[in-house]
Image (cartoon, rainbow over all chains, first blue to last red; front, top):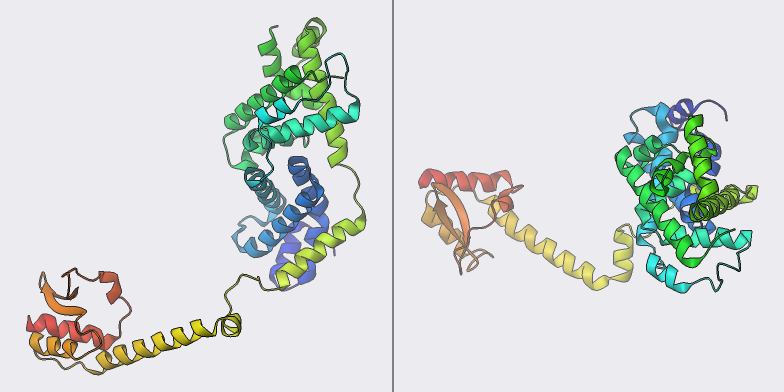
Length: 180
Length: 182
């Protein structure tokens, strides 16, 4: 099924269920990647992506501007991912992460894959609001304006969260002797 | 450029690897050449993020997304498990059903009895009527600022006015008559 989002939404609202499936097909990869860049775990990202589309299905009547569907969908997905991060049970605090240690001295530099894993863990140990902003900015390349719009916060707040998030990462790198 | 200043400007540099302002970019690069700790932190974050970007952007099996769609479709079409269902209630909670039926029957009798009588001529008559009803001993009729009201027989507390909402019209007529008589 072809057509822009507005056409598909119109067809869907007129009873064509195939139009909703077409909307899912069109956006699900992007939604999944966006969510995955925030939660990292594939199964969690899959579940949040599903929940985002179910929420869309149940609330499509609330979307005023049908041409802003994609932005609305992303906003739903980002907020579900943020809620997930806030409520996750295995959240490692920044302090705990630092205490855990790498087992490596600064002299024994970590290999690339390990750096990635450590940065991922470090990101997940940040307060969720900082982690979300840093992930959206650095892993998705979103502007602070877009981030502020998705999270319904002020642009200045998004910048502040990013600043403190990066500061947190830097502290971890310095204290745990990470580096290429 | 100081370290603090570097990190305030480094956000876009981390994303794009280039700034729109060549002068700023030059300053950032100069700082990185001179400051070993900033260089290590910056390179680690940039490197780690680039690796993570590749990880989250990796191609997934087409069946993975097909499964997402199928899951969504089944969850949309299947009623939620936790949604209240009378069928489940009857199947799993017969005692509750019995209690609900008993309460409904009692309410029907009480309200039906009240709603059938509307021709009161005095407050005393209504009080007598209450005394013979299922509310006997629980509530008394009294006037409150010139309006009829029910109050608890034991403690004199007025019933929540919201409780009068939705009572049968004839019940409202009873109260009007009390008011007129008062």
